[in-house]
Every structure is written in structure tokens, then in C-alpha cells.
Amino acid sequence: MGKHENTSQGGTSRYEAAGVSINRGDEAVDLMRPALEATHGPEVVSYPGGFAGLYALQGFDDPILASSIDGVGTKVLVARALGQYGSIGADIVNHCANDVLATGARPLFFLDYVASGKLEPGSVAGIVRGAAEACGALGIALIGGETAEMPGLYGAGDFDVVGTCVGACERGEAVTGERVEVGDAVIGLPSNGLHTNGYTLAREVVEDAGLSYFETPEGLDRTIGEEYLVPHRAYVSEIMALRESVDVHGMAHITGGGLPGNLPRALGGLGTRLNFAFWEEPPVFGFIRSRGGVAEEEMRRVFNLGVGFCAVVREAESGKALEVLRNVGCEAWRIGEVVEGGDVEFVS
Image (cartoon, rainbow, N blue to C red; front, top):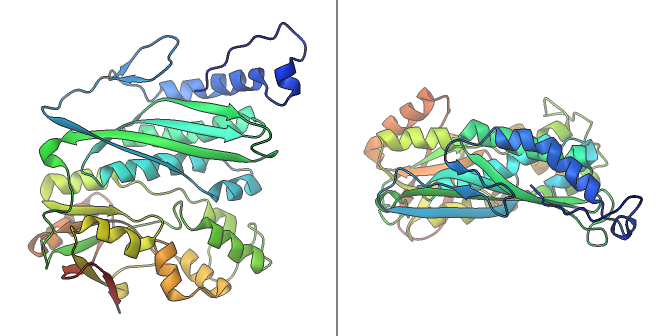
């Protein structure tokens, strides 16, 4: 993870007195190293001293690379309030892996960046261990990253988490949306909650209502904090299984901007008609809508509302697509169809 050069000759160095502890950084690296190395297969090239992670790209004839970088946004403030950090690591891995997946590529390796005002080795290691566990579950190598302690830029207790995922596919396997046609079916894969988007509004609803993250208000089966920290769901195994059996014309990861802001990116300039009655919405969205008095149009443009990923297939193959997904444990739905125009229309 972070690389640190210890120049102190004993006692408190000027650097540490200014707010940056090399020893804390080294401790964090030592704590996270076993989790990181557990994700390494033969593709990860040993590089003692490591200024960069090395990965041997194998098994492709005409490969193209796909990459994504993102952060978990103000969800980190919920994690800090609850003192629970492991899910944040899973969030950033799954978010970035889904972005890569939507291009038609298979995610291969990941790098993380954790910045803070004062580095707490246990907390940082918890984030990276969570990332490593998520990488291991998806068959992704966590090949490196960085920890940064920056007092003055971040306040005490403040931190941020960013990640980068890189994947690859054969040039002919890239999914660009160019083959999407009017009449194609839109298959929705379920989210398990907020994922990593809309937290500025979601947190404001809690604050304005005078609620605590430790409360369980009517309509929720667990505390607000538990709902808000549910990790971003990954769709790698589900989509890989789908593409082995069905010709997928387009894919979209439903993140910030919701369905209206993300699904059109997968449709090659066409539009879609979606029916809310065709899928199930997790209770957390009803809580935000009712307790925050949030208008439906804004809900649709901020949150995923229960659909975390979409695949566009021929209508004739929609039934088979649903069967394949359900056979791998994913309760998916046919949520609409592709139409002329470039907008997302909602019906019910």
C-alpha cells in the first residue's frame, strides 16, 4: 500500500510533530499486507520494492483494457459515525468492478487510495481488508494502493476512499450499445439498497428528521445505520453467466443519476420505457421518500430505487436471460423495453 521512508533517528521527528507519522503508516501497511497478498495469483508479478503493481495479461488474442476510478462519496461519513469501516472497502471494489463489467470486460485487478487527516492504522487496515475480501470474492487481484496522511487538508477523523479497477476483453466482446434495437428487453438486476450514491441527501433526511443512525424507524427492519452501510452489490458472476448463454446488446451500472442518468448510456441513442410495477424497491427508499418529503422525480434521478444493473437483450431471449440469472441466485426482472427517442419513460 503506501510506501514510507523512515528518516527519523529516534524521538519525535519534525514531520511527526507537524502531524504526519511514518510509523503509523508503516503499521497500517503491515496490518493490511496479508489481506492484499491473499488476492494474488500467478498473474501478479513479484516486484520487490514495488513502485507499481505488475500484472501479466494472459489468455487474450486482441485485448482491450477497460478502467474505472471512483470514490464512495459521503458514505464515509456514515461509516465514521458508526465506527464501521470494512464495508467501505467492499463498496469501492464492487462499484468500480461493475463499471468495468458494463463495458463487456472482465475485472482483473484493483488499486485503492485511502487519505485521512490522521491515519488510524486499524481503521485503514479495516477498509483495505474489506476491499481485499471483496476482490477475493470476485477473483480480482488487489495489486497495490496508497495511504496518505494529510493534516490541514483533512480534519481529525476525516478520510476518503478511492479505487481503480482495470479489466480486459477481446476487442470483439466489448459491449458498446451499438447493437441495441427498438423492441429489445431491459433486464434489471436488483440492488440491495443505496449502494454508494445519494448519501448527501440520504444523510440530510436523517439529520432533518432528528433521527439517529442507531434507530429503527417504522418501515425498516434494521437500524438506519445498518441500512445505509449495506455494501454496494457486485454483479460480476451474474453477468458473466448471462453472457455465456445470451447475446447481451447493452449494459448499464445504475449509480449516481439513477436509471434516467445511466441507462441511456447503454442504448446507442435510443430510449426506454420502464414499469415500476415490474421490480421490487428496498424499504430504505420508501423511508427516504416519506421522511424526507423527496419528490418522486428527484428520487429517480438520485437513487437506483432497487435496480443496480441493467442488461439489454433481444425480447425473444428475455425469458432465457431471467432463467439464467435466477439459476445463479439472482432474482432479476424484465423491467421494460427499448423504444425510439433518447429518454427514459416511466409507467406504472
